[in-house]
Image 1: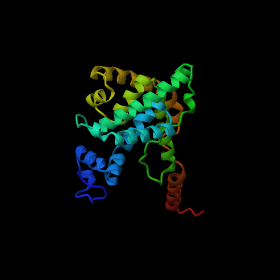
Image 2 (image 1 turned 180 degrees about the vertical axis):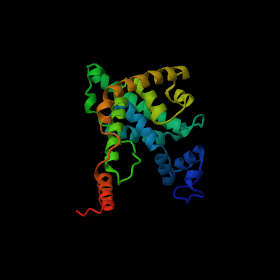
Image 3 (image 1 turned 90 degrees about the horizontal axis):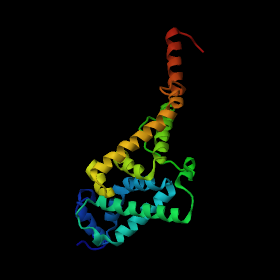
Length: 231
C-alpha cells in the first residue's frame, strides 16, 4: 500500500477502482482528487434529481464523499466505485427527504416547485451566437423544470437513465429495483415529461432558428456591400 505523500508511479486516471481506493486509504490526496473529479457530475445530478435544490445537492455530495472516504474498507469491488458512491449519495438524499416530510406536515404536491433552482446543463454553443445560446437555454430550462416536476419515484430513474445515460441493468443495480420496474418507471417518466413539454414548447419555439444580432448584421452588411450601397 502506498505511503502518504509518496509520488504516484502512474497517472491516477489509468488506475482501477481498487487501486484508487487503496491509494485513498493511504491518504493519497491525488487519489481523492481523481475520485471526486471523476464522479462529481454524476453524484451531483443524482442528488439534485432527488432534492431539487442546487445548494442542498452539493452539500449531500460533500457529505457522501466524507462518509465514503471514512469507510473505504466497505468497498469490496462487487460493484463499480461509481455505483458504490452513487448508492451512498442517493441514500443520503433520500434520508434528508424523509426527515423533511416528517418535520413538515404538508403534502409533497404543495412544495413550491416553481421556485426550485435549476441545474445548468452544459451548452455546446459558439460564443459568437448569443441568440442561439439563449434559445437553447430556454429549451434546456423547460426540460430541467419538467424533470424537477416528476414524482420522486420516476424522477430518480429518469435522471439515472436519461441524464446520466446508465443502462437498464446499471440503473436497476443502483436503485435496488428490478429491471422491469426501471423500464416501467422510465416509460411513465418520459410520458410525463413529454406532456409538460408539449404544453410549454410552443411559445418557446417562436424564438427558434434565431436570426438576429451579429448574424443579422453580418448578412445585412454583406448584401449592402454587394449592392455597392454605402451607409
